Image (cartoon, rainbow over all chains, first blue to last red; front, side):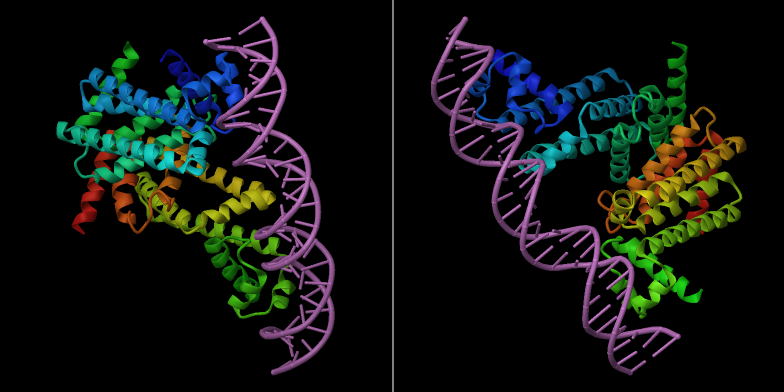
Length: 204
Length: 204
DNA sequence: AAAAAACTATTATAGTTTATTTAGTTTTGG
DNA sequence: CCAAAACTAAATAAACTATAATAGTTTTTT
């Protein structure tokens, strides 16, 4: 059980950063300081490692979201946190990796990734609806469309070809893009809260 | 001069809808009801037609923007109009066409398209700055970042793979995405104006 | 005078073969 | 027992060739 965890951990690091096909089993083994033999004693093939790697990664993200949810008192605060987290999570994954899954691992793509994306949209819709009930978000929007729009916007902000981190620091994107996005769906009450929170952040 | 105009007009229709390489000179000639010979009397090669086609297209867009500018009394109104126009313009162009330019016509890409994109960003920055002066847009943003973000968001809204028009009607995207985007950069005064305008649209 | 058709030279594409890489297995050695 | 190295079979990619498409030209016809 110990070895298995280590392999998944190492595979996650390499796969998410380099892509799947670029990482050979030899590389994976030597980066872990173990032999291929040992890997194949625990996993029957590369696909199996990949699948477990992804499941673990998705699970970690959900736990993180769960934590943010408990730390946040208001829907507004929770939503801003989740968007920030979303960008960072997207940035941590090489786009090549996602492409490879779609092209070369269609079964994983449709079974795991698509399901996970649907889950994310569903969660976003839920938070926005909660915000509407709390009166911080506008009630004159089609929540489905807005959710989709916001999620797609996030992938732009995480796209290193468009907003490379060395030019557009996370804090800049937060201030100028995420806040713009959130403010856009805020009611007058929500905007008031958002500005209060931003000001208190500056003072602290 | 008459023939030249007709050729450019026809080429624009075909190229923008189908892409460059998919449209053969034979097709272009027969769609215009003229012979290839006649085309080659006016243009020396396909590249020349393509270049003039693009220049004409860009020029038309600028004239359209000019017109919107004169029709709009406030920066806010102008900005909303320009975003709507931007989406429709993007939708009218086959993404394949843009890809081909980048891949197969790099000289046109860097000389014309890049310049035009820079121009669009510059214009967006100018309008936002005008809005800030008029007090309708927030003055606590990095206008460069926000402009880039908004322009990139537009290409998402125009992307038929993400927001296919038959599911997401333009009016829906306008109400739920463009307004969200604009509201995001609005000051309190700007939001007031935006809501007044939306209400008056409903009543009329 | 211009369209239609025929033509050619060039280029892109599809299909094939060859070379390389790599997943997974087996063997060796500490 | 496990790492390291050697191995094989299968998949990928590279190189090449034959074929088809098409830009641009020339000839014929209306």
